[in-house]
Amino acid sequence: SQKIEQNSEALNIQEGKTATLTCNYTNYSPAYLQWYRQDPGRGPVFLLLIRENEKEKRKERLKVTFDTTLKQSLFHITASQPADSATYLCALDQSSNYQLIWGAGTKLIIKP
Amino acid sequence: DAGITQSPRYKITETGRQVTLMCHQTWSHSYMFWYRQDLGHGLRLIYYSAAADITDKGEVPDGYVVSRSKTENFPLTLESATRSQTSVYFCASSESLAGGLGSSYNEQFFGPGTRLTVL
Image 1 (cartoon, rainbow over the protein chains, first blue to last red):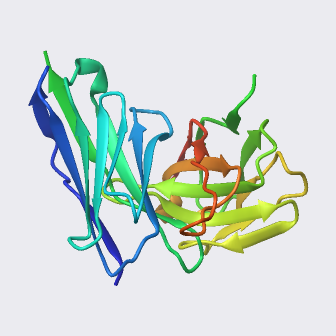
Image 2 (image 1 turned 180 degrees about the vertical axis):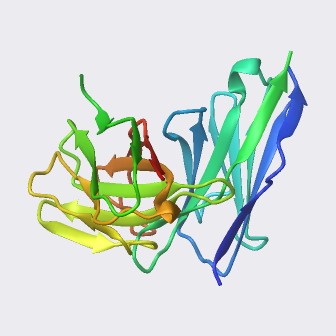
């Protein structure tokens, strides 16, 4: 069956360090992958999209990589700040019907 | 205010009652979605709509009904609420759907969510 995995355990990072979150998938061949941020009590907010033919995408302190051979995307936040603390979700398209399939998210905690 | 809104934000109901969750967007986006979010699960798609009067089932449609008579509104109805439908419900909209290489894409914009408790 199709599956997306994100670390279920919270990731604790010291302020100023780089946070790296992982999104692994099986039995998919997505055309693109999206990353969202979700704060408690709020809806997800779009951050970045990366296509299958792109290896890396950057936006300010954010960087996403996409390895279709490993079936994995890495999401990096450099120079992390306490305000970056949130849950980060990855989502992949289902090429057959264009619906997004979502990971359960990883909670990131940046400690001052 | 512009954006996507949901109402109510919180709802407590009893098993067997009908409940309608409202979703309104001001962008005139073609696509709208209803998801549920449960602890330990990713967002799961209930229903989506490509345009007014066009709706389709998602991953978990059983027990839910949707309609879309106007582009800006996409209400979700639980016909006879069950305890398993206790969840946080998110509405989202998108200008279009991505269709692979060479296709346009758009991110999904989410509402603030409705926390529904079925007793």
